[in-house]
Image (tube, rainbow, N blue to C red):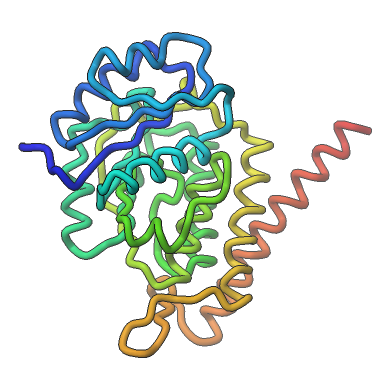
Amino acid sequence: MNPSTSVAAAIPAFQAEETVGDVVRGTLELVAEVLVVDDGSTDSTSSAACTMGARVVRHRRNLGKGSALRTAFTDLLARGFSTVITLDADGQHLPGEIPRLLEGARGGADLVLGSRTHLFAEMHPLRRASNRGSSWAISCIAGIAVLDAQSGFRLYTRNLLERTGFPESRFEAESAVIVRAGRLGFRVTCVPVALGVVDGRATSHYRPLADSLRIAGAVIRARLEGRCGAPGRDRGGAVERSRAPGRSGLSGVITELAAEDFVSRIVDDTHLVNDEREG
C-alpha cells in the first residue's frame, strides 16, 4: 500500500524506547509522515523514534497524553495534512490495522475509533467492566453510540479537530472529544481492530483514581458546553443532534440523565475514597 500524502500519524510517547521504533517503522509504510511527541521521557525514546524515520517533537517535561496529541495536531494540521491517525507507542496498536481506520473514514466518518469490543473477553475483568461502563455513559452523554470510548487507536479529520479543539491535557482529552463530536453533529464510527497486546495494563501510564476523576469532569464539562449553546454543524439549515440508537424522546432524556448521574457518582465516590484515606 502506498502511503497517502494527506494522512499523517501522531504517536504520543513516554518512556517507550524499547517499542516506539517498531511502531514508527510499521506506520511509515502506510502514511506519509509519522510525528512522535516525546512527552518528557528520560530514556532514549526520541532517538529510537528518529532512527526509524519519525520526525520528533519533544516536551521538556511530562505534560500528559492530551497535551502531546494537541502538540501533534497543531503541527500536522499546519503542515497541511487532512487526516491524522493516532496510536500508542507501546506496541498495543498495530500499524497494519491502519487501513481499517481509513476505510471507516471513506464511509464518511470524521472520527473513527479502533474498537476492542470483540477482544473484551481477553481483558482483566475490572478493565473490561470499566471500558463497557465508560463507553455506555459517554455514548449517552454524547448522544451517539460508541462501542469503545477508551480506545486511543483513532482517525481524526481536520474538520473535526478544527471544530472541537483538543483542550484537555491528559487521558480525559480522548473522552471529551467524543462528547463534543457527538454534540456538534459529527459522524463517529467504530471499526474492529486486532491488537498487539489486548490487556495493556503493564505498559499503560493510566492512573485509575486520578485519571478517572479527570475523565468524569471533562465529560461533564464537554456536555455542559452543548447546553450553553455551543454551535452544531449546520445541515440544511438545522443543527443535527443524534442520539444513541434506540433512544428518543422521553426515554432518551432519561437515559442521558442517568449517564450523567453515573459519571457524577464516579466523581462523588472517588472523593469519598480520598476523604477516607486522608482521614
